[in-house]
Each structure stands twice: as C-alpha cells, then as structure tokens.
Length: 446
Length: 173
Image (cartoon, rainbow over all chains, first blue to last red; front, side):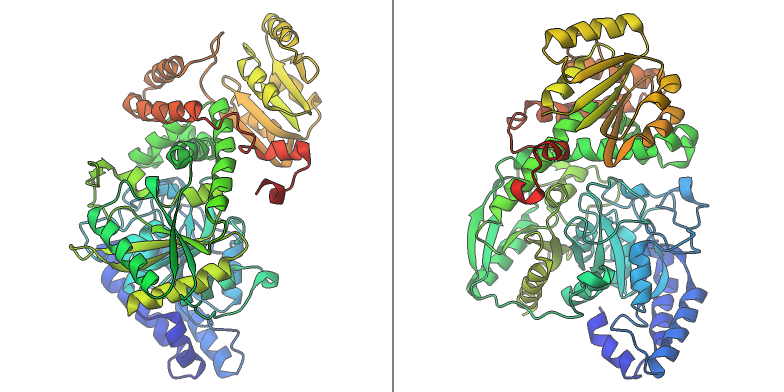
C-alpha cells in the first residue's frame, strides 16, 4: 500500500503531481469498484479539478501541509458540500449536502482531494456492510467475504489504493472492525475530540469520527488534520520506545470467544512486544459481561428516536434487515434505557481503573477473521456464536467508555485473512497511544 | 435536574425516575383525570409528593403552557406523535435527552415476560411478525441489564446525577 507519509515529500518536491496521484486512484476505482462496490459516489471530475488546483498552489510555493493534493475518500455518512450523503440507504438517495461537515471542511482546508463517498452498512447500523441500499461491499482479500463494517467501503478503498486515506465513523467498532477485516489501520479517537457535526447519527453518545489509513503515521496525519486548529499537535510523531512500555493484557470476556488463528496471532504479537522490553500484566473489567446489553439498549433507544419518522413514512426504502432491527429497537423501554445509561458510566470507570498504572491495553480488534457473506454464525472457542455479537465484542467497550483505540494489522490467518490488534489508551493522551502504536507497528513489520 | 414525563398512566415509571433523582423536580402529564388522581395518591403514599407534580392535560393542548428547559423528557406511547415531539424539542435543555417507548405500561410493575408478550402482540398487530423471534433476543439482553448487580451502585451514574451533585467528569473518574 502506498502511504501518504511516503509520498507527500515527492508531491512537495514536484516529483509527482496531485493530478497523477488522483488519476491513479480513479483508475483503481474504475478497475475494482465494479467488483468490490466500495464507492456509492465517485466525484472524478471534481477530484481532478481539486488536484490541478492543488498542483498550482504547491508549484507556487503555497503548500499548506502534508495532506495537500492527497486523494482521500469519505464514508457516505459524512456531508460534503454539493454531493449526496446517502448513509447507504435509499431513504436518503436524493439528499444533497448544502455544506461540508466540520471534519470535511478541516480536511479540505488541509488541502486533501476528495475522490468520492464510500459504501457502508445502511445508516451504519451493522458490522458487515452487506445490508446497503446500494448493494454489499466485498472484501478485497477475498470477495466471498465481508469487509467488516459499517465503514466497509472505506476500509476496502484504503486496502486497494482507491484512495490513500479515508474518514470513517465508529459507534460500536465501525472503524476498527473493517480496518481489522481488510488489513489497514483504523483510529477511533477519544469521544468528542473530532466533531460529528454534519455526520448522520446512529447514536450521538457513542458515535466517533476518525481515520482509516495504510499506516499508523498516516492515521495520525489525518486525525491531526481533523482536529480544531487549537488542538492540532503536529503532522508526525516519533515512535515510543517499547522498552519499559507498560501493557495491560485484557483477559476473561475479551479472550473467551476468539477464533483460533486470531488468538494465536495476537498472542504472538504480545510475546514479541515483551521480548522487546515491554512489561505485560493481565487486567480485567469486572462487568465486561454486561457490556453488550448496555450497548444494545443505548444504540437502540437513540437509533429508534432518529428513525421513527422515516420508519413510518418510507419503510420500503430501508433494507429489510436494517428496517427490522430499527423496528425492534422501538420496543426498548425508557426505564431500561436509563439502566443502560448508568451501566455506561460504570464501564467507563472500570476501564479507567484497568488503565491505572499502565500505558495501554491490548486485545484483538476483531474476534474473528472477516466472515463469509451471509454467515449468521462463526466458529470460535467454545462453539459457534452470532456474527454480529462476535464482531462487536472487542470494540464496543470503548465506545461506551469513550477511550481512544486503534486497530493495526498483525499478521494473517491460515486462510490468509488479516488479523487486527487493538491498542487502547488513556483519555486525553491520544498522542501517547499513537506513539506506542507506531512502535508496535514497526515491531510487527520486523 | 428537571424531568418531564408525558403520559403518567400507572405511575410505575414516574416512581422509578423520582426515586433515582437526587433533588430537582419531575413534572408528569396525564390526560385522564381519574388516572391522574390515582397516580397522585400513589406518589403521596410513596413519599414522593415533594418532587413529583401531576398535571391533568392533553399534551398537544397543554404543552405550550409548560415552562422548560428539562434535562430529561420521557415520552410514552400513545403520545409519541410528530407534533408532540416537535413541541418537546423546544422544552429540552441544550444537553437534554428525550426518550420514548412504544409499549404501554401495565397497572403493576411490568415484568420482562409481560413486556415481551405485549411487544410481540404489538408487532403482530402492526404486520411485523418477523420481529417476534428477534424480540426474544432483545428480551434476553434486557433481562441481563435488569439483573446486573450495579443497578444500585453509586459509581453507575447518569449524566443528570452529576448535575445534582455538582460533580465534574474528573470527580467521577
């Protein structure tokens, strides 16, 4: 995969133009999108116009930063002025954004070129990207499998070079799950750091906006550009030393329903970090087994509220699977929703405790490799389990708690499908998490 | 903390909410005068009269007389209509929360079994029989949530609890 960090110096030096980079992406889209269905809208002409304008600015000595002239994509849940935001649903097929989402505006100001809007699980309400009003997204590593979701088109776009980076959203794992399933990096920032204004909501208290990219350095570059100017830190970070890094290995619930190869891949990586001088201690979250029930009631309550009107007025425009889950969501009682609000606060506190005295938590990003399209269950330790709950179980805890978390590729299964390692950092210390992730990424590559 | 409830009915949810509050007020609106009187007596007996006010009124006609803002608005079926939602939106505090539920409450505390039976009957009536097996899954999750040992744990706070105590996020962590 071409990384932004590698190529941006050549763009700055005029060795390669933004127009050429953008043409390359558009040609990969032309070649692969009919198979993978990663994009809902491709803005080819507009992208080339933006690229040529970027080239002029760069040639005139007005390069604004490392993203200047870099072709990226946006999950089609995020507004881009003048382009439709479908949210992967026919309910919104005619909705055209009148202005940029905050995150789009910030990336535009940093010079990025937008090649198109990526396909997703309808309204981000699912983990496989199969149920989309625009057809399923396929996994570039094996087209018989799901790319994960809900930001499935985004992950497939980065994995294949249809765009060099992308913006996704993560309510229960929708950045980290597809990143793991497609072998790219996905960063879910701390809750509230990146504005969700101009992004179609699933559950505002759990929604996070963040990057998927080809490397940790690229994910940082994109994340930094998404922040308000006053919060930006810099375009690049140094890797932290692994020597002395204190790692908490989450046990119990987080490891008891894993695919055999995923378990082995993650264990091997942790061993390697230990050999490089990191200390590893086992930590736990006492009420981890309640996380799925808490999550379900919150996301159901919030999604039911947002969709109530269109479920009544345009039921036929939803995919059947998503419509039925939204209809089911409407039966959550107010009193149970409030119980879940309480549970969320408790889990956040317990994850803070787990981080006490250590630098980061480590666990798989995704308990299983990318599941076959249409699969309802997958085999894991202890017998088969439902695909949706397996896909969410390692990521959703940190949507409840709001901690920053990153998924990075760590090897392949015997079927040559990517495995994702997840690192979770302290609130208020996303840079420290990314510095550690840079070191872990380098150690995996060695 | 200020809570508004639309549709007092038996007062089950009102009691649950009022007991969870630490100070503040709960205003509950009931269209039926007899139901409102019964609920009022119940709140008095439960020692909640100091924080719960019952007003008799049809939400669509009386909501404009209610003074906001509220941190939490609980909207019960059958009042969940677009026109009522629109009025309620104007009564919410900037970080306030509106929650709604479709299922009616029974006279006594509603068990999961009762809720599940009502939800399934409602789904059938609405022409969504596919929901019936799916609701069993939701019921399992709800059962787990209700059985959790942290329900009375002071560490498990809603954002509204900290409004009452004046605690900041830092105190909670």
